[in-house]
Length: 359
Length: 164
Image (tube, one colour):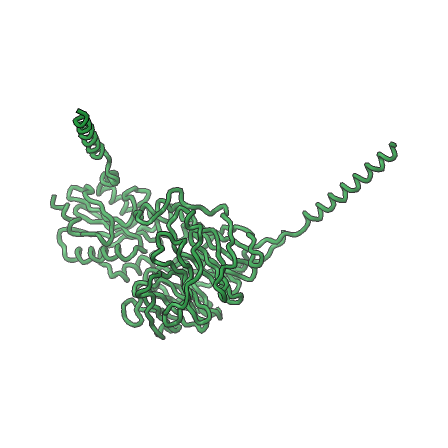
């Protein structure tokens, strides 16, 4: 009996050891982390003191030869080459053929021509790199929709939109407008993120990004942590992803239309906003900012907190939330461009890549 | 009898309501208590320029990235100060970078004497609740009028306080 008991004990111990070995093996498995690795700097030169204050996000041409910065003070577009030398200024400060009253957004075509949306004049104006105007077309002049971000895809202009009749309940509005180069509407599709009813915040603007290789469109309501993905062939939504990360915050007191601007600013303190959505080979990247009290007092871009939220592009699983020191200006060809110095006399863009690190 | 009682109660409530409203402090009251001396201390902190007096002065406080309505009023003040011998106008821009400040003045073609508050220290001085705002300092060195800078701005109505 005792021998049998000892035999059983030996077997149990053997099984336990085997199991614990297996657990050890599991813990030794390498988990893949993503980190930012710096690859270089681009310091803008030759345009000072011409520019006043660039918007935070900029664009890079498909061939990576040119960088385009919109000046929010001057409503002009400044072009630099890939090493930061000033090339040209696009747009004039008037209402003439080249004139821009409000540079609302712009997109760079594959041939490096630039399409600028002037919301004040309701024009789309196309320029070449030297600033010569190519054409000018009416855009949304009598249309029942308002447009926000522009992108260029297969000779069409894509914008995030809201139907004006649904401004107060945007969850009922179409989300994306597809326009021909003559400014005429081709189609409207998509729906605003339903989170708009839960976020305690009046929000109608979405950021957009197109993955041209895959033929999919990523959209993100600025006051929502969630990303909607649309198939650009069928215009059907193929995914709705995202989580409310630690730094995602909605206002404690509701923000609604009709509040005074000082009150909106007060209620927006420490509230987060998705200001950009990008993709690399591996990841979908949300650029989130937290609006601080200092930011509202100074309108100094560096006073906002910047956080990247990474999702696996294949599985759409959450990877990590990554606070960063600088504003993410854009992402192009797997490179992340951060604005490291906002001083016009020393405007510097740092070039980074997301690299796998094994832990 | 009941009707009389209701009427009396209504009258009492009305009187109390009016009294309470009268007691409610103006939301800007603490900023009206500021003096030209406090404003001069602030200006000396952000600039080397020497101001001898801020009496009969309008101070315009803005950020460099204000939207069109505020900038329109700024331009009207610029025209007004050029044509006025009785009132001084000064501009304070909250802007971190000197180049941006200079480009702003150049672009807006502003001739009003301008200061740059590069660190937004106006917040710590608690001189204004928010920006963009304008302040009128009277001949006795007291703040006599505060107002937002926007499309509804009426400069002459704002200045009419000086005559009182």
